[in-house]
Amino acid sequence: DICLGFCAYQKDKGFLNKLISYDNLLNGLQYLSSALIHHPFSGNGRNLSYRRNLFFAHKGYSKSLNIHAGADDLFIHEAATKQNTQVNFSPESIIKIENYDYLSWKETKISRAVTRQFFKGSSLVFHRLYDVTLFLFLMAALSTIFIGISNNWLISIIAGLLIIVRFITKATVFRKASLLLQQKTLCLSLLILELVLPIYNMYIRIYRIFRGKLDYTSRV
Image 1 (spheres, rainbow, N blue to C red):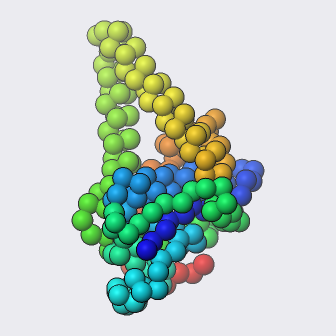
Image 2: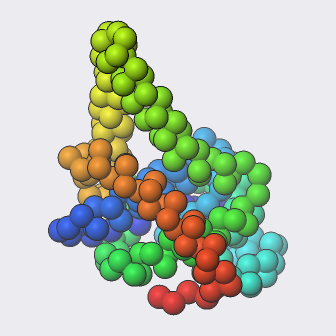
Image 3: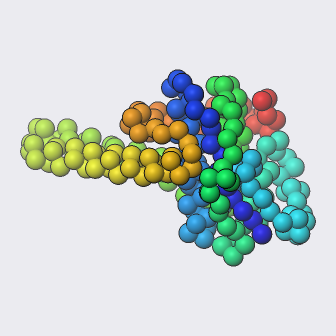
């Protein structure tokens, strides 16, 4: 009844394009992998499909009339189950879209943040778990390195190796995923991108709080 696909940004120069591509790939991996393990919670409105009878059975977008963007995400969140959802990431199914400028991307992330506050159950926890675990891992590893320098160099070396192993593992996974999903390969910039994006996501959450009701009207 529901088929989820992926949208890839076209390749372009500049750090902003790399950051947008990384954010898009990470978001895509989250909702696609979740659907593949039979826990669908979201999708990309530019590349998904659903049956008309399912749409009317759930009263369409009636529950998301108070927001301007993200109705597709909320509909998938409500209607998708492990029995009625499949994923298609064949080369022919992937849609290429033009790059955003900064302001458009910022507004898109704000709209996405607003939409996700309506998610129920463990879906929102799953989405935010990545940033939290990354922060905790880096804090623990770096603290261990600094403590080890003063007391035991072996502890510092082990902590440093764990950081390297994690980075190599993630770089390998993201390279394979970027090739499969036709998204720009980001391995060389991955270390910087995975530090910058969580900080920017925190900025978006804080900015959204001060925007208040403007969240419900996209200015894109």
